[in-house]
Figure 1 (cartoon, rainbow, N blue to C red):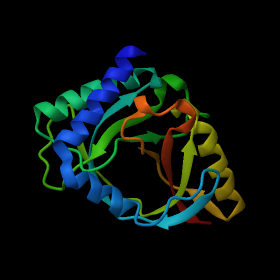
Figure 2 (tube, helix red, strand yellow):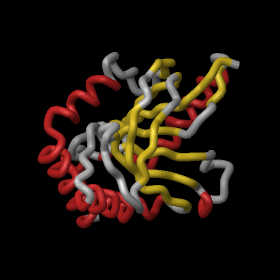
Figure 3 (cartoon, helix red, strand yellow):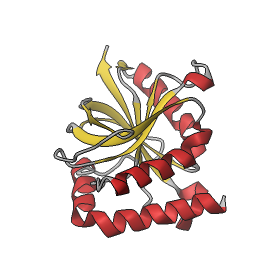
Figure 4 (spheres, one colour):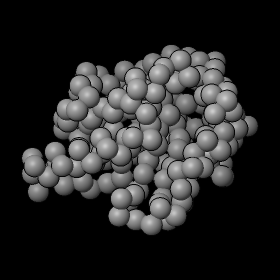
Length: 191
């Protein structure tokens, strides 16, 4: 746990030291509208954005080492984030074999960023998303995602892309787990 807190502190330092105003601009651009209150879901139109990430298959127990590796390679390659850390989860962990879950951890970056392996440069292209906010421990975001999927079904929508999580706390080590905020996007379309 102590190592995880040190990594998060390093992440806060990394973001503060190297991103300057670009982090603020990206956050403001994506959150131009107020976020829904925890427990509420809204359909929003968002702009595509470029991000770099590390892809993984398997258990989320590797997330701490993946974050450390991501930050190390970004620093070595002089790739700077322009927004908060994101997690992208492909498939449905509740239906899939936990050892075969596809997921990524990354950051939005400038379009011109030069990214080399093992990092990947990708573009988020889903523009219609259901947006919700999870308040609480990161490991419980699945509960909010299930409620959001119920909302989609009850309101005539279907999910048509991976789950994206934006981690909104700049320094999670200074926030109690019950007050951590995660913005969740579910790409969707009307049925």
